[in-house]
Amino acid sequence: MIGLGYVGLPLTVEFGKKFPTAGFDINENRIRDLRSGSDRTLEVERHDLAAARHLTFTDATEEDCIPEIERVSGLKFNEDFFAGGRAVLWIVR
Image (cartoon, rainbow, N blue to C red):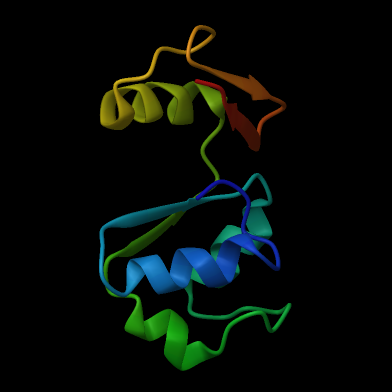
């Protein structure tokens, strides 16, 4: 999931309860807090973060995200999907 705000974080946590899931955000402090089990924005509760056992958080940049998205999706960057900024991706098919 790219962007761990009020929509992205709860979705990421729910997916992370059942499936291997990575949450990306460019805010290093946010990632540090989430890795320690804390959400200052109170979008999810501490026990929900703990329950998402298949979840990892990263502040990876586009250089890290793009190859992983290509690998798992089979899509090609700048052909099948495009990136805008460091945290927003649009998939166009």
